[in-house]
Image (cartoon, rainbow, N blue to C red; front, side, top):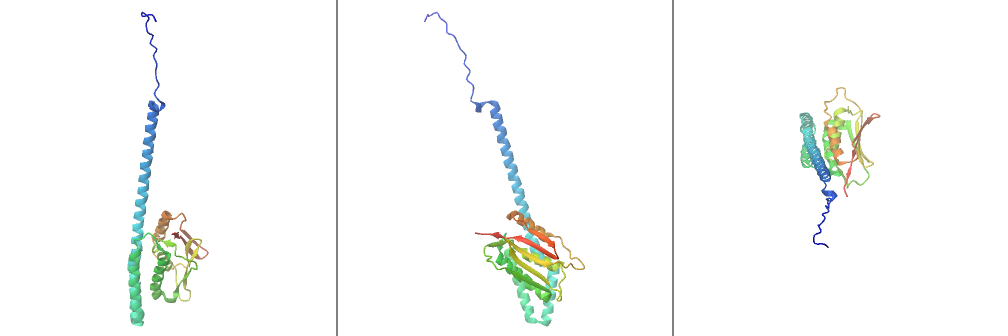
Length: 243
């Protein structure tokens, strides 16, 4: 090569990899920001739902306890006790013992999310026994369950509230007793009673059924079904099964 020859310069431009292109970086950052915003919003939504359920749980617990310390309930219980003291002292002592046991049972279960169905049925029987002292032969409870129930769970005091509603809103007489039937059908505990509206409607906020429906919607894919019709008031409560 001639020493006087000059070098020729050829410019070469090396393109950066696609993932380092400005528009790709902006697109990636935008996608990340969008994902973070969606995750944060979803987390906030879940927290609001959880807080709402906790508030509903507290309201349910307070209502369940309040329904039993309501002056009307206590007034009826003490009237029954006073009558029994005069006419049947041994039954009066039995009434006091049952009332004490029932209140103690409520305090033990009211903070739980679920209890065994067997335990709930025992609570129902205790409540019914107390009301039986007042209504006598005018009311009747029939629990017709033939299958094994050991694996079933239920929201505490559900059946007691349904029984309370039945006695509160319907006429019950010795000539025409109010029958309340409890059965299990297709994975649900079913409570039925005849519809016999009182001449003067009892005051009701509808809170009991409303709260039961909301709580079950959070723990079961099967909804609570309230079906008045054919002269009967029927409520189907989905049972939660445990392994």
